[in-house]
Length: 221
Length: 248
Image 1 (cartoon, chains in turn red, yellow):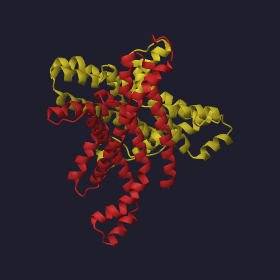
Image 2 (spheres, chains in turn red, blue; image 1 turned 45 degrees about the vertical axis):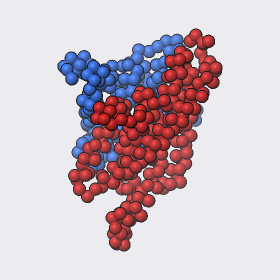
Image 3 (cartoon, one colour; image 1 turned 90 degrees about the vertical axis):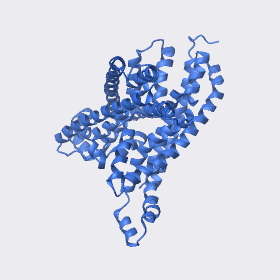
Image 4 (tube, chains in turn brown, cyan; image 1 turned 90 degrees about the horizontal axis):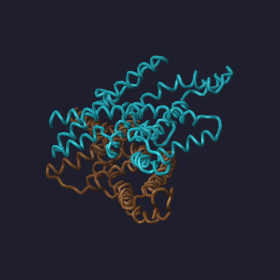
């Protein structure tokens, strides 16, 4: 048994590994679903920024700015504690996924906006000259060009989201950080479990960012 | 919510949040300039270590880093930091790594001819940095730094999980005391938004001054954001820098 004075105990690492893989699975689930929410909602916000009436543009602009400039942690608590008061009950994991997706949708909205603005004016004019409908103009001409350009930027937010998933530990979701805290609480060995989790984040985030850089060279010119 | 809760928890909490933001921002600035300039150093080893630093600290989650500095560092090193300073260290080191990419990007964005002119005048590398590159690069850094400062402010909320009595922690206690969540959490969100707004205004003034010094006009904001005066148009760029490095 380790009494806390030894520096590093490989036994503790191997004891933690089964929990680590379970936690990683939850983290990746939250990440995948959160990304989908943020990609979808972000596109909705971005289209709303270009709505013909200011009664849509302004409220959406204010709401997204508010969400983007306040901490995810507080939003998480808001959703987790306040929604049940209004009789809306979700599991901690669902709440966390929605919070992270909603928060990052305000970032992806800006990415989409930049992508849409980067589509040359000639494309809009060509769509008009061909008398394409409003929907066709967006789905067949503008969005395919805009989204292609923004894929690497969206990928960057997926990595940023990955690094924010530990926040869900605060509402008790059993993702990586929470697993390591439980392990530490049981064995009184904080060093190994926390270090493994920290290293795991670097090992996932760094290769992913290299991959995105390669993707960026291919897609964005 | 009673006046007592305001006086004992929320107001001191706001002050702690502001202190944390300012101290971490100061540390992050030092780290950002140190590491960012090292990344443009002529020696490959220096560049490598600076790059290594940024990749490590950008790669890890700042909450995990904070827990690590709180719980693991004392066991490995045999000494512990006061919670407040441990939090400042964690925030400063990780946001400093993001800032380093901004510094590097801005330094690389200065026209090569400027550097060459410095070489032609036989300036030392440090003179070139101090007299030619930095004066032109610093005004360019301010808008992305402004966005990073807001991210840092949002990051300070994490310290509440370690029991430091910032605004988020105060909100948690008030929730326990009043068993009423909607009010206090709405107020907390508004408090953060107001601080963010004030910080952006301050950075905006700084930008105007710095750009006036080299005869430029500040960049305009976009749409409703211009009216709110918050995030600036360079936002996508900042985050590209946050992850990818380089403003290519």
